Amino acid sequence: MSDAIKVGFVQLSAAARGILVVFCDDGLKLGPATAKALGGATELVKRAASAAAFKGKSGAALDILAPEGVKATRLIVIGVGAGKATGLKANDFFKFGGVAAGKLSAGAAAMTIMAELPDGAMTSEQAVAIASGLRLRAYKFDRYKTKKKDGEEGGSRADISLAVGDVAAAKKAFASAGHVVDGVIIARDLVNEPPNVLFPEEFARRASLLRKLGVKVEVLDVKAMDKLGMGALLGVGQGSTRPSRTVIMRWDGGKKGEAPVAFVGKGVCFDTGGISIKPAGSMEDMKGDMGGAACVVGLMHALAARKAKANVVGAIGLVENMPDGNAQRPGDIVTSMSGQTIEIINTDAEGRLVLADVLWYVAKKTKPKFMVDLATLTGAIVVALGTEHAGMFSNNDELADRLLTAGIESGEKVWRLPLGPEYDKLIDSQFADMKNTGGRHGGSITAAQFLQRFVDGTPWAHLDIAGTAMGAPKTDINQSWGSGYGVRLLDRLVADHYERK
Ligand code: BES
Ligand code: MN
Ligand code: ZN
Image 1 (cartoon, protein in one colour):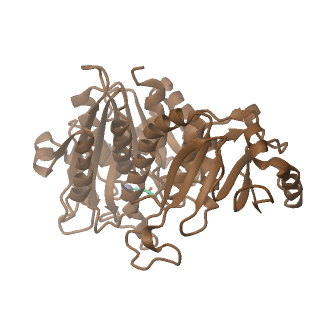
Image 2 (cartoon, helix red, strand yellow):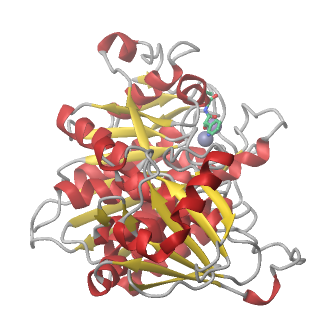
Image 3 (cartoon, protein in one colour):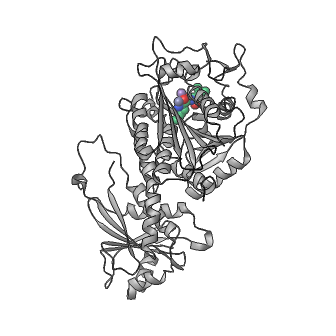
């Protein structure tokens, strides 16, 4: 998907073009270069603010005609709240960029954003986070619309200049941050694609495009998975005419021979529920049941494109869960790659079966420092946490704390929920080593307990992203159904803790 906007950098002192965007704090204080650019108009801005009850709250915007003497069409003042005093995070700057992009009207336009806080120029990282926010907000998935709305046709792009203190430094930082935005967009595209287009083989083909960036991509077909004994994953896909795939991606940007970090994604390209079929209402949303796998591909893109100095494994299990004469039945017992047997109680609890084999494969074959899996795993997590936080389960406090912090900084928040032997008992089976559902109580927790039986003691965290990967309310930086959740969170985790300096 091509961008609807183009972002460049100019000096803070440069003359504004088009719409002028500036920042103020909750005392309506402007930065020095901003005040200079507005000249005698600062009093008028104060009056407009008071008339519009604009108080400079974080992310609030005052949108007025550019006053006399200001070389711009419109003037938009965005609040940063208490500014420095509140400890602004990367996520705040993403949001400011999103708010600014939301002020662009359809069709081509020019905008100049003065990347200055009341106490002086923003850092390059802050200015670049604004640029990222602009692009994230401007993303639209319109590949299948043959008729464009007025002002949308002809590929006209808004031309946005960020006025910064240090142009060269900002350009350099954006080169890297831009790859992360590209990764988010790749993940969003994958989630938004319809399930007749994006089935396991096609998903594997798209993941294989990462080879262009130097990622090693290995695709396991049904025969290869059969040989490995991946009976849990294969059981899910056996009712579909579209064959299952597992894709292993490796980015070796770290020290040679150093253990990698690993990310594992649930890639159920469509989840009908199988024989335990889902009701018709909103079943179309189950095209997004590969949001975990989409995130892993987007993340691998981001890390490889920005040449992250870390060894990283990405692994995704790709299946389609269909009812059919050959489909798996409730009552079936399957043998996983680990050798553990699983009694199928409900064929709609398929994600954990897919992950069971991929987690085991990654733990055994790559011996990672840790594994983080992402999965649109349970409806119960949406009931518990809504769309604001992903559910997090972990056997390792250090990893959990790092994810928690990365979540706050990136704005892709996680909330930790418990694991424990009492919950684990709930998935014991009378016929096999375990069953694939634990009953109605604590549904997200028993799903996580199931996964834990396949990590073989590896430090691990499971993120249940059923509420955050798709269908969440639109935000300042996401207007799309598929959110691309997790790419920024995990890029941050890697950048902050696992990259060779
Ligand atoms: N893919 C669904 C979970 C889901 C629900 C994701 C809503 C996004 C939005 C998963 O495979 C599923 O069907 N889970 C069942 C588990 C149950 C049968 C134990 C659920 O949550 O109802
Ligand atoms: Mn299901
Ligand atoms: Zn599912």
